[in-house]
Length: 334
Image 1 (cartoon, rainbow, N blue to C red):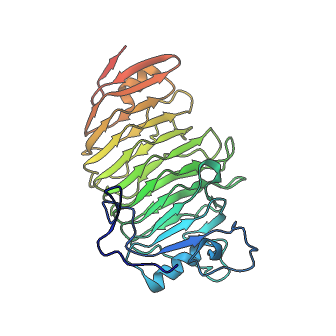
Image 2 (spheres, helix red, strand yellow):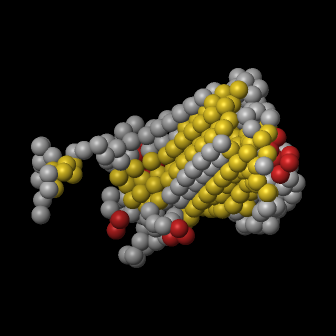
Image 3 (cartoon, rainbow, N blue to C red):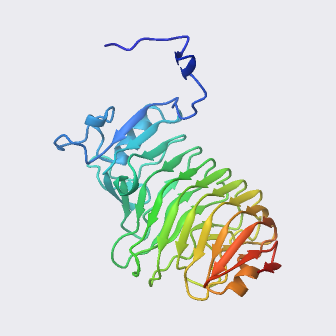
């Protein structure tokens, strides 16, 4: 049956179905990627349907770059898809697009599936990273895995432009080994209006223990960064390291950050810090749960160098104890 135009929209029982206030409806095209599709996999398809999916994210990126580079295309990565990232934006499955493929403006990379059935992207080298240099992109619902063996990845995701969304991803490490993400999300000065939402990260101590989870790079910090509803439990490389670390931005401090409703646990023994700030930092940290090694110290330094960051209703606990983190370095304990 051919498609039919409905210029007045579509409704069901009086409720609008389309058009409506559905922000997810793309203005661009949708491309499919899956090297696990049911038909015999002999070569990459054209990416226009699930049955003719590209075998690599690289192929979809290359297609967008030549056909629709700024219109907000969506790449749907099918459940069960597996692929390596072997360098900066170098994807392992493609036989054609084997060099670095830039992620065009507005591109959303979205995994399909739930839990472990989501697409799994494995980073295989120290310099492996998914790099966002163009604005208004996203990576969502993926399993992002550090390599087996003794390789620590510098940063799984790097951003140098605004409007990035990192949502509902699982940052997985091979626990107890050097296989870790040193940083999971690295934000440069241009990463304004970035959203880090609903992600999960877990790793126990290893010789390549992560330095942080989300961090700034360079002496100028981005503005308007929103970190909400994440759970990150990592044995960091130091007791005073932070799951969120903006200490690099010592020249121009980050401003107007919101860090709320997260659970951050520094699992290294005797840890005393969960968030590491910098002079001049502004924004709000509220309704977070912090965990560390020593309750007494955690109450005073859970947010180390808070500067002008407004802090309220942040809780911390350790060893069957709990406390309320005060604003700044003051503590109210119970």
